[in-house]
Structure formats: structure tokens, C-alpha cells
Image: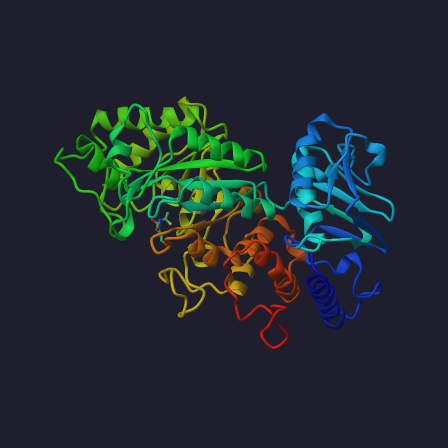
Length: 514
Ligand code: TNX
């Protein structure tokens, strides 16, 4: 970090600190104590001490636990001056699995910052990984040349929900392995633990199925607007799954059925009720295609597809879509979903479907993702299904921020950064809290063509969804959140993220003070 950027970091901290100080007037430790942090998602509990730990170019990270070496190396890889040391006597950042607090569970951590040492402990490597994300946010975003002071104190932290996800639609526009990896890095930094990949739709089939080669030789060859499309080989998909797992993220593959299947129908016309040749589709309409539900060949096809995907997916879930099947008769839809559920279960997986699947007789173990119908979600919850909340009006990242947003849709809502943040899963639905598994923010890509487009729609709304999924409602507050969000600006810029400079966020580098 050069002097100028170090100076502006200090200024930034002071600025945020003093904003927090003057807005609350309750901070006894002054503007640079740990409680004036800018961490997102906001931790559960923080206590502030009066000193500081000095992190320098000789600071070493160590652990006595074999199972923590990979996360220790991850930390070192994320922050240039840090070194890994096999000898813990020389380490001043210590990682351990000694955490006793039962509140921490499998994802929580305790971070104790003392003058001489930082001790990060948890009950699992995953907990340590989340503690590392918090620690990284306490460091200046750019690399230091000499040293940086971190305020002392302790953080005790664990998530509100066990399911914290984002969905990326790689069907409407195809995005390759590198883009998906960058997306994984984004969500991991804010403690999300699930990546839902929307792998098939009318406009393209995006995953190699060895026993059904035309799905990719024909079905993957285009996308919205007529571009060349693309697909993941099974090896590439496995590479993504492993990359995600290394950051404690579970991949959920979605094959959208029985509607949203034009790419499959164009590849294998026998899947349709007429058997006639069908064209590939490059438009944006939804709800016109369906597999033939009273044709045994359909079930043989779905079985073959889900078998191969289950074999390369270590996570417990298969998402079967089930949304907007307007071309399928209701009784046929119910019959189809019930049969598909048996196939998913036969391959040892738990079914997830969009909220319409609640119209079928789904087993209580299956999971329902609410996007449109609160009624469907309530019905499912009464049936014993746990619910993932993705209300389109609040959490769809393909919705425009305001009417001037260059890309995106408006059909559900305009979602400004404050609206994306300001909702509580418990109060937007009639479902009892214990049936809510968590939340997921989807990014549909009919209008999104490049990584820059993705970044623009996702940043900064994603951080708000991460906080809704992780932090207790009692510590969430827009007035304070917007200051913490503003402080992420340097971090976004360091990573060359094309974020939306929302007018409701008091960015530090306003043109007037830049
Ligand atoms: C609805 S959400 C859809 C998607 C579209 C999206 C666009 C859902 C289950 N279905 O097919 O891409 O709207 O906002």
C-alpha cells in the first residue's frame, strides 16, 4: 500500500468511526475501537478493549491442528504480508479448534484480538473460515508496506440461518468456469454457504450428460439474443464444485422441469407430446415449453440426467425447478413432480423445487423455495417442508435498482439497496420461524451478458442479503449498515468490481472529497 492509500484508509476509518460516533454518541472508546468496525455481515456480539494489535510484514499465522492448515494457508493467500509458520511458538495469529461455547455450533467462531496475539477459534474448519472473513475485513483492503494497527477486543459470531445462498443463471447467458469461480469468491467473502446453479432452461442446456450427448451438442449452442452459448463438461462442473467446497460452499445443481425445457426438446424431440422437431429458442419469454408427462421416455430421460448429476454432486440437494409450467396441465404437473421426487430420492438426494411444487404431494423432507407465492410456501410449511425464501419483490438481483438502471427487469419491483436490505424473513411471511431454512438471492440473466453486468447487479445488494442470512435481526439497522457498506468501496475497487454507486449509500470517495 502506498502512503497515499494508507492515508486514505486511516481517513476512511476515522470518517466511518466519527459518523458512527456522532450518530450514536454512545461510543466510549472513541472512533477507532473494535465496535466502530465496518464488518458485513454484522457479528452477533463485540466487546471492545483499549489497545491494538500490530500486524506487520513479519506476522505469522499458525495452527496445531492438521485440519486447519488449509484454512491457515487460505488466510495467508488472501493477505500478502502474512506468512504461514509450522512453528506455533512464532505465530501471533493462532487458529484452533478449542472453542467451547456451544452457541458457536458448526459455523460460528470466536475472534480474540489481544495486544500480543490474535486467537481465532471455532469448532470446525468452516467456523475458522468465517472468522477469517471477519479478520480480513478488519485489515485495510490494500496490502500494507510496514504495519497496521487492529483494535483489541473480542467477537463472538454465528449465523441466524443454516442456508445462505445465491443463485446464478448460466442458462439464459452462459458464463464459464472463471466467472463462476469469481462469483464463488464474492459470496464466500460474505459468509454465504450455498451456490445454486441454474443449469438448464429454454435458452440453453449447460451441463454435459454423457448418456444424452445431444443435450450439449445441440441444446447448449445458443442463448438469449442468439450468442453461441456453451456448457460445462462434467470435469469442469466438478472443478467448480471443488473450488466451492474449498470455501465451504455447497453447489446445488438445478435442472428446471417439466417447463423451461425448450433446449432439451430441441435436442430430443421425442420428449415432447407430438414428437415433432422443435427449434432452439433465443427469446426471453417463459412458460411455453413442457416435457410430455404421460410418456415413459420422459421418465427414462429424467432418470438418466439426474443419475449423472447426482454422481458428480457431493451436496445433499438436487433442484428440479418446477416453476412456471404453464404449458403443463395441473394434474399432469402433480403426477410429474411426484415421480421426479422418487427419482431424486432414489439417487440419495433431497428435492428442492420452486414454490409451485407445493401443489404436488411432496414429501416433508423436500424443500420449497418461495419466489412468488406466499400461499404455496405456507401450504408447504404446513406439510412439513422447510422453506428457502427468495421473494422476487425483495431478493431478485435481476430487478433494476431504479428506472434508470441500464439492464435488468422491473416485473417484480424496483429494488434499491435499502429495499434489498430492509426486510426480515420472519415478518414477510406467515411461515413459523423454525420452518425457514434460510434465504437465497437469485441472479437471472436474460439481460445480463458479461461479468461486469453481473457485478453491477450483485454489488452491493448481495452484502445486504448476506447480512439478512447471517446476522440476528436485533443488530441489523439500515442507518448503521449504510456506513459499513460505504466502507466496502475500497475493497470493491481493489478487486476491480464494477459495483453500483447507489445514491442511498454515503460512499467515502464522493466526488467532492476524492
Ligand atoms: C421468473 S423465478 C422466473 C425465471 C425468470 C425470472 C426473471 C422463477 C422461478 N422463474 O424463469 O428468469 O422470473 O426475473
